[in-house]
Image 1 (cartoon, rainbow, N blue to C red):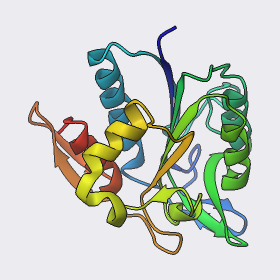
Image 2: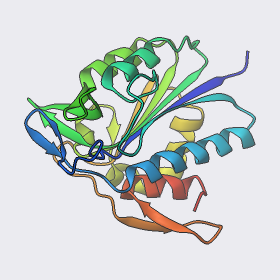
Image 3: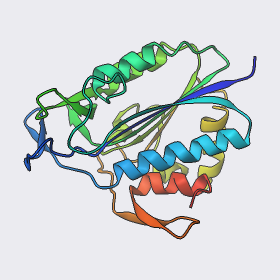
Image 4: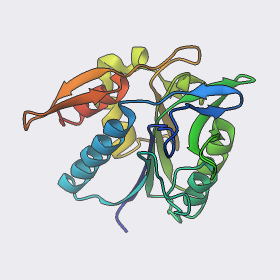
Length: 231
């Protein structure tokens, strides 16, 4: 059988829910709204989809995006920590397949462990989270090769031994993207992180597209889009 790829795209803007103007919370911290993560998620999904179609690679796209102030909490694709793990644990991929996981959102450190801040609870006030430990456990349980792209603060803490930050791959990003995201090389798991374990990740980078439009993106995701020849 030919290689199959499943791409999971997770993106959140952390909009206050309903009529509220109060920031969401996680573990006592404010979780401010982000302005570029939804653009990042949608364009990365479209770019990878186009890449795989051009290469005739069979693939499925799982979009887990929380947008606006009235999300569907009951959907299995609502990006809560539990739903994300459930989706991964039910993929059913074979050894020759490839799983690509992309996350755009907040990352917080707690006891030196990276927590990806995921969709809020049903009350719409407290965010859930997904620890790097739990995410790694689920992905490592897959038979297939996996590539993980994290656009979040402190994302280098996800897997320090396996991660590449922008500084370490900037000179050969095209080759690394080809090896890790398209065919995944010989590594069962590869991680591309937008920042070191002690660094923040920044948005506010305006990029222009071939149709003449422009929009705001995170700096890391903007570079990935450029490598994909999407801008």
